[in-house]
Amino acid sequence: MVMEKTKVDFLGTYAEGWATGDAQKILGAAAPGYEFKDPSGVVARDAFAEYHRGFVEQYGSTMALSGVVAYEVGDRLVACCVWEAGGLRGTGLIVVGPEGVEREEVVLLG
Image 1 (cartoon, rainbow, N blue to C red):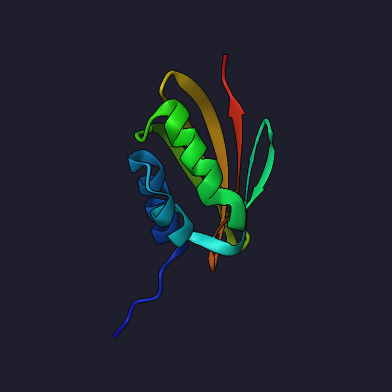
Image 2: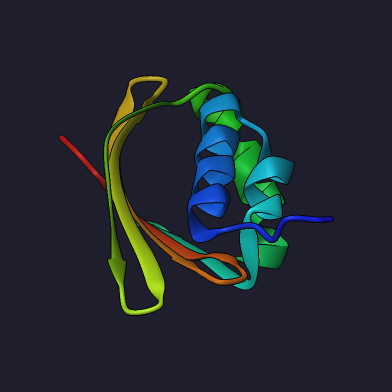
């Protein structure tokens, strides 16, 4: 019997993908309409692998995540975390639905 993934499962896989620099793992946890927003703009799912490749080249393939807080809001799981990679530091607000991570918006810190 195949177990259906939960929103917590999707979030865990997504976080693991960022922590290890694995774009395929990130996309494997992402919903079909996934969008990633950073200060430079919005990156659609189909452009994410290229975006991530550039991020890894500039900041390295490992990311430390801390201060993760997650709440159920209606039928969504909303999570926030602090992350650091290659001297760059920020926060992420992540929305997870029944099909996976729908979007993440990051804000850079100092």
